[in-house]
Length: 440
Image (cartoon, rainbow, N blue to C red; front, side):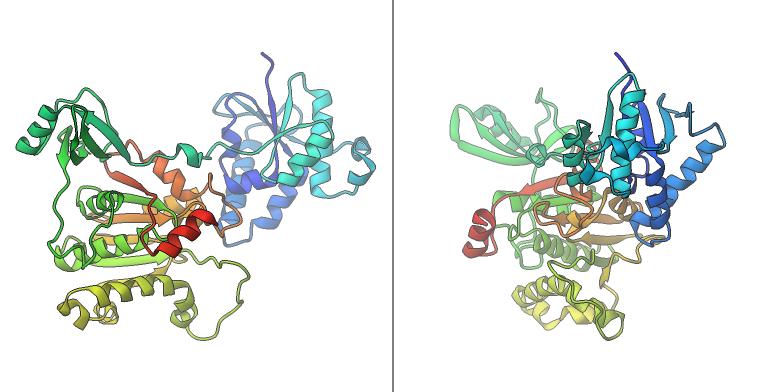
């Protein structure tokens, strides 16, 4: 079988700085206009700038090993990297409408040039939909960069149905565990158990990777987690994971109104103030506007961030108003002043170490896989991280429902004994919110 050649667009490198190593032992081609575009991004302070600088450093390293043009340089995964330049009259191969010397048109012309030169197929890889359409129009193969994409239809739910006999369920209740099941389960998966010979007999449990057994869910506080009780089975599973000290990373995915943020805050407050498992509750979210941005806001840092952090404060207000009398008397502003609760943006998390804290990252679907990695690697000894979000509501223009950091973490950590996950489907905010989430 002939070797394939993958010609990469700039946006692929900005999305994943290690993308040149994602094509196995095939040839990777970088057009010179792509390197020109990288140069314009390298001074940016965001992830695009970091990725552009990382790619430039890697190309400089490879340049010292061999000649990037002509024969190219061998990569450690067995592939080959080449940098190609536009030959004279290369744009003349394109239709008249595409002959303006833009970077996209030069990339198309180079792809056609390489198609004539290479024995195997040349495939243009770009995250630009319109460029893929143009490539198809001029007879080129084109595809999206999907190495880190996760299909929402196949996203791990964190729950499963388990069919047993009545005798096995009786033994489960008697011994408070069940370890003689032939099936294998991912760590901390939550199970809805029923008896095949008696459909009225049911139980719920969680697979514990340490004991290699199914354990019953632990009973929560009598008055709920900071006054909040589960309204459905999915929320009950979520509170089990959120409050369990052996589970250091929890991901909650669900539509608006399923209770993700409220459950996380309630379990976090309970773990910090009542159980004293952590020294501080740190709540954060990325700063991305929905719709047109308001522009620069007046005031100090706290005043500027107030609109972005208001959804978190709304949930805290609800928790403190609906809790017991003692909790009503102690406002969350007081806990903030005492340093027990902190609401911060994610902007300044790089370089920090966060020991023995309960960290909640709301709206995590707006983060890239690299940004989520940066957050999780901040966790110090004894810390717990909770990521919540809805992949169907993304405001970050550089990620989508399949390539965002939240779904990426769900799939990568599904076999880790340190992590647990629940997919919430049932809306509990209000009948109107549930209907809007379903119908709109």
